[in-house]
Image (cartoon, rainbow, N blue to C red; front, side, top):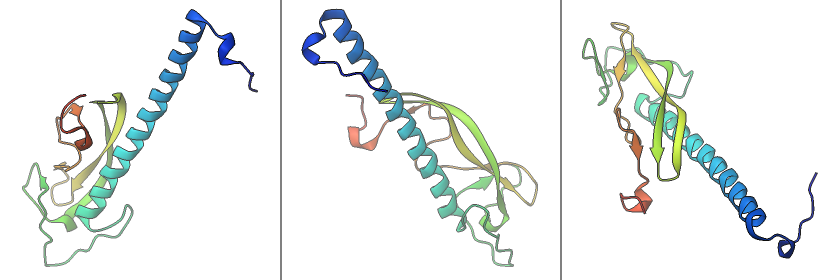
Length: 140
């Protein structure tokens, strides 16, 4: 249901409150969009590095496929030995505002069953402030 309100009839505080409400809703929706794009980008990077889609079959062969990501326990860098291991959630500050519960993919080494250290291009491991490259690297 929508209510027709003429802009001319809104005055003072009432007008400011409506504008503020619209801005807050727009910011919330924009942050949800940024969160979805970041999560999709992280998933795409995992697919690219592993060379297979989510749920895809590992290629187990005598020829290891060395990648930059490394098992934190045994030192393995063979993409064929890494499996997806869910996600962890983290918070992130962006130029658009605070993102809560960003889902970051995790991998597990199948040689020793420990976590793989993933160095994402899109998001650094302990980075809590994410600045879009389009802003020139600084808050405006």
